[in-house]
Length: 88
Image 1 (cartoon, one colour):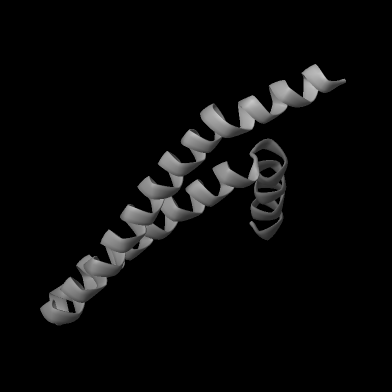
Image 2: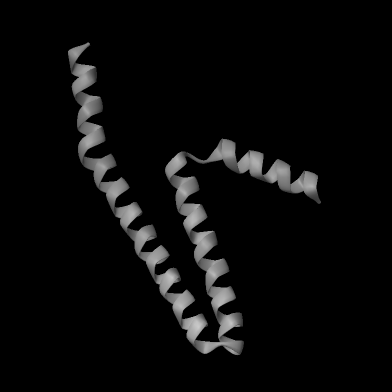
């Protein structure tokens, strides 16, 4: 079991870039915290609601990160690459 997890993580590390790995981490954290908040709210509703605010912050960070990376990639980074190719 541990070996399969290690092989899976190594494959994931080789297959995806830094931004994609960060987005996957945000999604995993959001899913885990949502389930945890649901379970906690069965015992303590106030604490469960407070944990959902943490999930909301993670969702906002996920969306913001995606938008910023797309804007940088489409606008700034492509133009920088084109300028470097022209100078050579």
